[in-house]
Image (cartoon, rainbow, N blue to C red; front, side, top):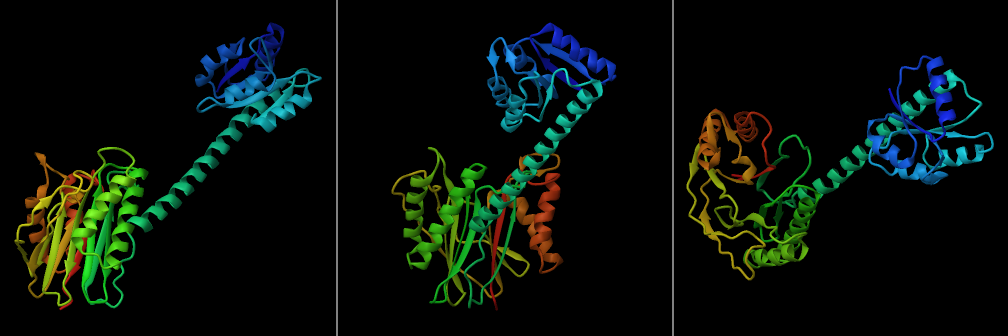
Length: 376
């Protein structure tokens, strides 16, 4: 164990060294004669034996300065016979314990150092546990905002959704989706992707998703919804250049037609039986947050009986392929999808599993999938 003795008095330092030698302490002892010297040596120490009377610091000031350092080690304060009150105050200020010079032998000093180090480790473990719990709670809140239960009560339209965070982060990014059924029988859906990763992007995704739901419930047409979302994004984003891609779909009440809009987003896939049917080409508009006063236009799609409409974020097509420098891409995704469709009707999870397998592990980017199905 690496122990740093911070003591300007040579006699007291010699006494500490003798006590540790007497107890045959398995320590590597180094010494600093001032607080400035201690700060330079601090990163190599697991425990600090700190005298509070130093040439360049006095009292608890030296303790506060050492504790303020990143990853500060355990600190055991050494006090004089008439300074026990100061030792108690030091413990209140963050020291692990205090020892009174002249009233300690080698074994007590050895146990004190070991206790201080183990207590600091336990405190660090508790802190990490609290951080993990806070992170889990924050993730849960963001998940409820980004990936809500759809408002399809009373609708006959089937819906499946999937979400997978990118890499090993196990954190939510900016991918979001939602679906809402209106009293006229129409069903509206959105899937979007805020550029970047992290809590700021996730919070912005939540903001856009909630704004979209409110606008749809208010009966606004998709063209106006997208323009308003663009304004919300510009007002709420945390930095210039932050943009969002989105795909918006409206399924007619009779389920035989739909209209979709693309704001810089991958085109959905229309599946009928075991075939992937080409969609009427929609103008891929710019992403949200790129051009002010931009007007997005949609395209009408006839929907044959038994249709399935697959909307996804680009994390699904940006995985790697063994032996190829290119990304997976839409064409290869369609090849995998056709193979899965021939194997049976429950193809969504096997499709994602195959894409992940080709990538050699978890996908690099967050991935969301929204699958709408004809109830017929």
